[in-house]
Image 1 (cartoon, rainbow, N blue to C red):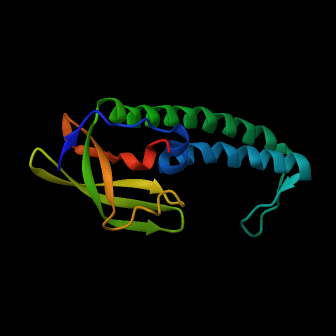
Image 2 (image 1 turned 30 degrees about the horizontal axis):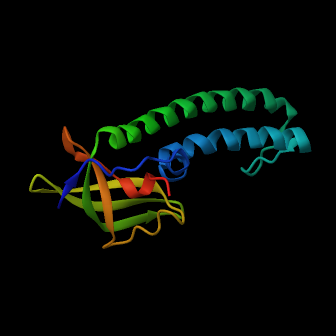
Length: 166
């Protein structure tokens, strides 16, 4: 397969947040926690989902605000780290052609995409843990994809097509 370093497109932060499962969770946890604070503020309680315990009242708001701030800070750091990691592939990676060799779905929104590629006459297999949605479900077995690999460690690679701006 031909190696190419020139025609690499730019990544999309929105696609990173929607597709990279770790980044997706880093966005969703603070939203869920502040959503609980809003629910308690509006309705005066939050139902406890375990049987036999009373619902959470307004006295729980300070705890959830603190928890929300903590998850916001940690989530921001996770997003920065993951974005920089993916950006490094776009900045320094080498583009090669690859092929999806399989997928694995766990529950409804989580899964892995398994892919193979060749670099310097060696064949590599790798996978990516992704948030499954309409943009990632198109990566089915046999689909040809563009791969970005780390030239210093060709075992580390990502599917470029998942993160490029369209």
